[in-house]
Image 1 (cartoon, rainbow, N blue to C red):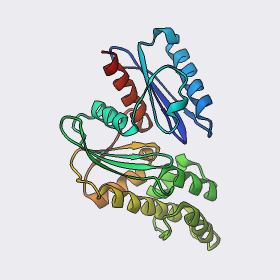
Image 2 (image 1 turned 30 degrees about the vertical axis):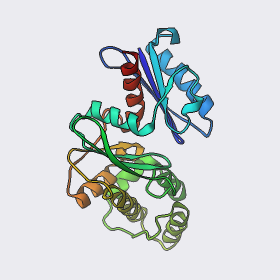
Image 3 (image 1 turned 90 degrees about the vertical axis):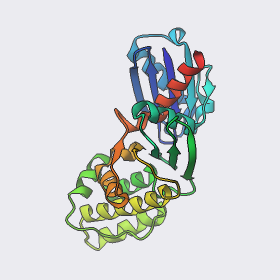
Image 4 (image 1 turned 90 degrees about the horizontal axis):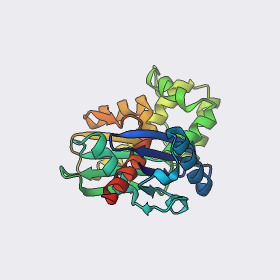
Amino acid sequence: MFLGCDIGTGFTKAVLLNEVGIKATITIPTEADPRTAGKDAVEKILKTAGINDSELKSSAATGWGKSYFPLKSKKENLINCLVAGAGHILPSCRTLLDIGAQQTLAIAINGRGQILEYRQNDRCAGGSGRFMDIISEALGTSLENMSDLAIDAEDKVLITNQCAVFAESEVITRVNDGKPVAAILAGIVDSIGRSLITLVKRISIQDDLMISGGLAKNRALVKFLEEHLGKSIQPARPDPQLVAALGAALLAKEDYK
C-alpha cells in the first residue's frame, strides 16, 4: 500500500493506493492545526481500508503542512504532486488550473508529464477557495447551494473588488440595496472567473484542460471559464480536491520501486 497526503490550509486530503488503483480516500478540515489533521487523516484512512501503518510500503506528504505529517515519508513539492495526479487522471492533460483555499496555480505540462511553466497567485484570497468561503458566510448560504443559484441567475450584479475583504463589504452593500442573492452570486463567479482567466493566460494554454481544487466542483465557475476561454475544461475525477494527494501517493509508489 502507498499513502499520499496533502495537508492544505483548508482541508487535509489522503489517498491510499494498492497495486490495482485507489483503495481509499479521506478529506477532513485542517482547521489551522496541520499536525492534528495529518494524524487524523492517517488514522481514518487506515481504518477505512482495514489496515495498519506497518502494511504501508511507502508514503509521501505535500501541501502547506507537509512538515507536520506524522509518518516517516518523503516531502514532495505541491506542483510535482499536482502534475503527477493530473497525468494519472487524464494523460492528455496539458494545462492544469488548481484552485486551493489560499492559492491558485496554472501549470503547463508537456506530453511526457513534465512541467513547462507555471504561474501562481498566493498574495490575496481573491480567486481562491477562501474567497468563496468568505462570500458564503456573508450571504448566509452554503457552498453547495452557491453554484446552483449562480448558474440559474436571470441577472448578474457586477462585483468590482477582487480582494476578498473589500468584496465581502461590497456584497453586503448589494444585499442591503435589495439585489437578489442569485444575481450577486453570478457576479461573484464573474469576479473569480476573471481573476482565474488573467492567471491562466500567463501561460501557454493547450488542450486538454483540467481544473482541480474545491472550486472545480462549482458548475457555474467551470461554465464561465469555458465560455471565456473558448475551451472545454474537465474537472478532475473522481474528486477534484484529491489530485495532489493522489500525486503524492503515486510518487511514493514510484520512489519505492
